[in-house]
Length: 277
Picture (tube, helix red, strand yellow):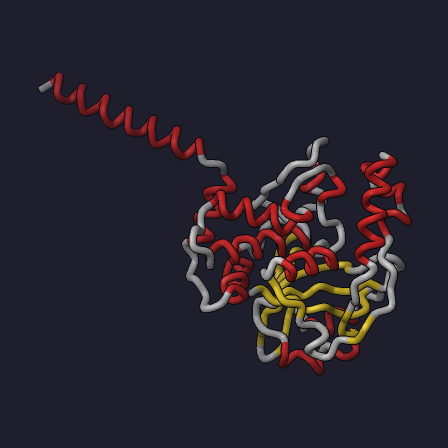
């Protein structure tokens, strides 16, 4: 009997150790990812994106998470976000959730495809640093559709060159080759049309904005395309913004409708609307 008890103790101890090792072998990000994949799947990718985005409410805001390593590499951080990494991460999760193989490896592949030009990591300049190009590339890959012009957006005559015009703000641009490559990408980006809905017209187009649409807030700052990004969420018949808020230091839903939120900031000129497919 004593030997049998020892044998059972050894079995359960071994099982506990093996289980613990298995859990440790999975990164914290992978465990979070699996939790999000267990959330209800929406009828559309934007609906799933909104469900996933809401599940992150309260998570902390943190800037600069993509620049922690000296060498450019894919960063997966599901703990804290800035506005762009929040939108990008949730989008990659929602797209993966609606794919034929919704696993963690597929999610990382999608994250890289969204974040890097042609999905290839080749130094700092290979990352998409302007959200305008992010949307263009994602649309070319049939992952999103830019709805801005269709809902009444107007053409913006604006040259995008903030990074190279403010070289001192970007340590990586001190390298001449990197600077030249980023400048070349800016020049190419400026060949594309740029549509936006002026903030004075946002309330008029609210009925055409769907829950889960990506809202990209255009900038009055010279050379800059967008100031901020988030997701549309309807509350009491009005569109609000679900976003990683620098102001609130966490992921929140704006207390005021999107149109009123925009009016609080002089630097915001309007919005673009991008819909996940």
